[in-house]
Amino acid sequence: MSAIIMSGKTLADEMTIQMQEDVNKLKEQGLTPGLVVLLVGEDPASQTYVRNKEKRAKALGFHSLIKRYPSTITEEELLNEVQRYNEDASFHGILVQLPLPKQIDSDKIVNAIDSMKDVDGFHPINMGKLLIGQPDKIPCTPYGIIKMLDRYQVEIEGKRAVVIGRSNIVGKPMAQLLMMRNATVTIAHSRTKDLPELARTADILVVAMGKGHFVTKDFIKPGAAVIDVGMNRDKNGKLIGDVKSDEVAEVAGYLTPVPKGVGPMTITMLLYQTIESAKKFAA
Ligand code: GUN
Image (cartoon, rainbow, N blue to C red; front, side, top):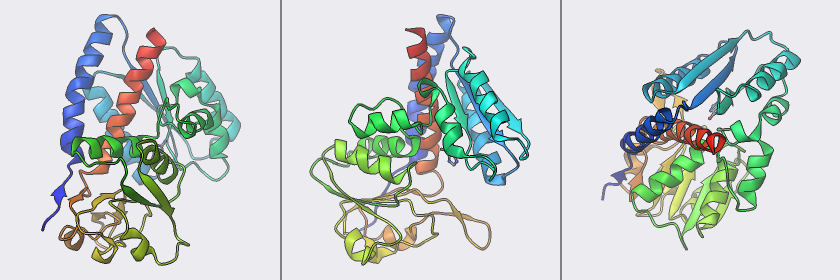
């Protein structure tokens, strides 16, 4: 058996067509969705992410701005910048690219973003709403993964899901979203014992651990849907996932590739939530 490859790129392209119609309609009403990305320092990975976000935002006709700051910026200065964009009505989404330099407390910065403009879904108000089952802004990577499971008609209700990774950005919200869809969810992490054995109980396995090619076929229940959130570089600089895709594809029922899997969906959900935010500001 060979797994069905779940293309995030294809779904992103499909969703973008609908989103383009939404943007056109809003523009006819005199409203252009606006997204500002605050980028501190020169981290090459962040530069690439941010460029991709801007390219796609511009292609949709957004009002899009990348504000760059030197890595020496103080916390107070950055807080002032966040405040400035909270008050700027031409932007409906604010994203502060993470990680931030050491002298800056990221939590303080994220907390300062107007939760209505928090299109990343990282603000404690949005996290809290998600946890009590009243989601508003949702972290984009897990949100995109749910869209992919639905697009490929992978049943969630009643299934066993294992999420490897417990970050605030991916693991925790992913588990919550799966639970809201009536999956039975286990969160595993670096201290979990007998990880392959646990992973083999999963009908849906989400891997967000940040270790290249860590998950082998021994982790996979035959027919399982395997979602690879990993973005690692191998020794030749090639982008690889957390899942050893060649061998896992022989056992899994569904598998997301790296690249063109989860990545394109993360950006799509960011733009989607910016459009939804613009609609709310207009209402
Ligand atoms: N750094 C890596 N991924 C992300 C993301 O999705 N949002 C933000 N703000 N920073 C990131």
